[in-house]
Image 1: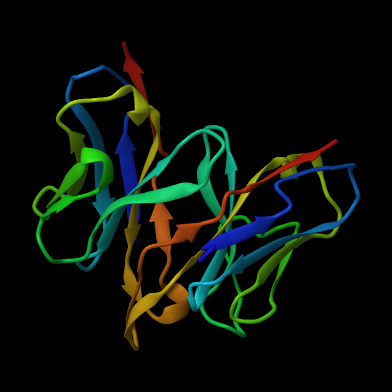
Image 2 (image 1 turned 135 degrees about the horizontal axis):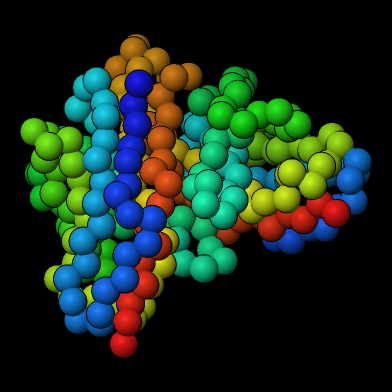
Length: 119
Length: 116
């Protein structure tokens, strides 16, 4: 049981280059998330997918796109990388409990992170 | 709207001393509350969580937290700090709503340092 895996672990890009960060989970979770973590800024939500087939913007979506490929996989794409996107990126997954409008997100499980530098 | 406030971005205690990390939340309904720990160059891992059962929650590594509704607090404690406890700690809240609206909101984090 690998949990949440992310590739690559490290990446250096030049301004304007594109890349896709991959994330997969083997816990049969419905919901998946992409965060970025910057010094002094805590975790900021980029995009999330509450269930397969849906994606929604988080707090800082500009410059990113996502694809929920299937229940297991959720990728994050940078179309034209900028130095401001230098960060550590974390993928997470979780279940949601309840029904209707009484749904709560339970424990999120995080991947090990991707450290991205844009020059 | 839900929110989380962690008081103190950096806390330093002596080895063997009490650890107290403060967290206050804002939520319109009884929330799920979490404490996560992040060691250097690693992802976040769950320390403990509150999901409306016992108000005193015990977690891994000797940590515990008490849910106090009247104070809207969920402070994290450990009776005796160990050098290995040095890490970043995040408090988080999960509110209630429709599926697409239910997310976990994280506090800004508290870095815990342990003095020998």
